[in-house]
Length: 122
Image (cartoon, rainbow, N blue to C red; front, side, top):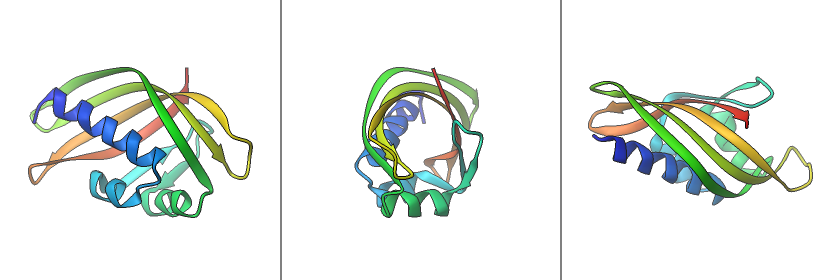
């Protein structure tokens, strides 16, 4: 796998999130995946996917601004991406969020998977 593959995975993640495509997310997120929200709340994979499906996490669009990838070793990468994400979350109004995603990616069984994402604003 290459850095280009990791960037493609990040883009797939963002497209799937905005499209509420939990089937694709289910394939690219590691079973132990966690998402740490900008509030500091750490959410398990199944809970986050359920909230995408029921609209609690109402992602609508994601516009990539910048992405950088560092190869840690033969099977691990560290990605930092910045995107402007349009969403209505927890019943709030739709707004644009300038988000930085600090992502750990691993190759497992010849497939890239996202281990965790820590989201902050920029």
